[in-house]
Amino acid sequence: MTQLLSGEYECKLDPKGRLVLPAKVKANLPEASGSQLVLVRGFEPCLVLYPRAAWRVIHEKVMALDEFNEEYRQFQRNFFRGMTEVELDSIGRFMLPGTMRRYAGIEKEAIIVGLGNRCEIWDPARYDEFLIKDQPTFSKLAQKFLTTEPNPGNPLAA
Image (cartoon, rainbow, N blue to C red):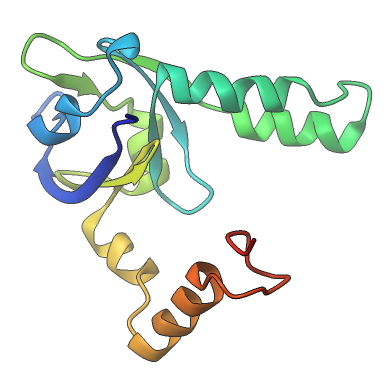
């Protein structure tokens, strides 16, 4: 059974810019990843933390793009920009590099959000800005993506 990263966790950075990975998140990391994780910039103003095994799958897809195609090179350059490997210490802390903290606007507090194969790390105020606040809109998205009736726009439809 695949272990999934889930939940929202409020965290504080220590004065050195380290963040303690919540125990429930740490417990659900794949054993194969050990204490090695990969931190990248998100598409939104957040950071994304991957276990090594999940990152390897994405890394292979991006590296398979044709390096002689300008658009692919531009994507690769921006996608890998700032990517850093982090390692959990004995109490589950890891360093958030200054450039990454500035990108995400993270100063003293953060929200860690488990999203299955990865976690996003947000500044709490920015995270709130990106959440859907209108429940009918959220309901329509749930219907669009989770209904099992035949629907060409639904990846779950059989």
